[in-house]
Image 1 (cartoon, rainbow, N blue to C red):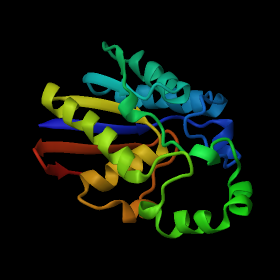
Image 2 (tube, rainbow, N blue to C red; image 1 turned 60 degrees about the vertical axis):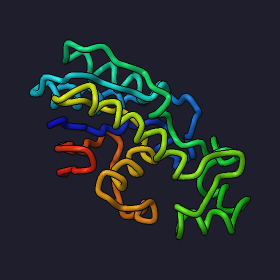
Image 3 (cartoon, rainbow, N blue to C red; image 1 turned 45 degrees about the vertical axis):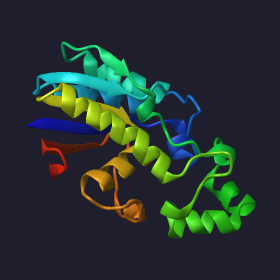
Image 4 (tube, helix red, strand yellow; image 1 turned 90 degrees about the vertical axis):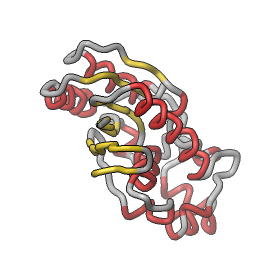
Length: 191
């Protein structure tokens, strides 16, 4: 039975400012570094088979700090990179609400129906992120950490629980958060 441990990267200044991060390569702030250290200490009770990470610095730095407590090397994969917010990237939420009022309202009400201008939709995220999960469960039978981002992890949590992305806003995972899944067999998950 494979254990999938979804980790959200530590805090950044853009998290605090409620700025859409997306593919911007934002660094962890001091709190985020401390969160990553605490994650590493907490996960040190496990012997991890692997650690996979998004290539973005906030996730990769979190993964590398966790790896300091393990005997594994971080494997970087594009499948875990953050959601492509397109034109929204780098903008504070309030500005997005002013510039794109209809789309912003639709994102809040029906995120599964929204494709970001010059960006992705949640189905795009699910396809690439679930590809990483499939790879992990075919290669490893123990515990594997996937360090990623809010949107990616929420989409994975929905998918692994058998929910579609219309449930996106009902799923929560804070910065530095952990969500565990035991992957029993193809298509069977225990949360």
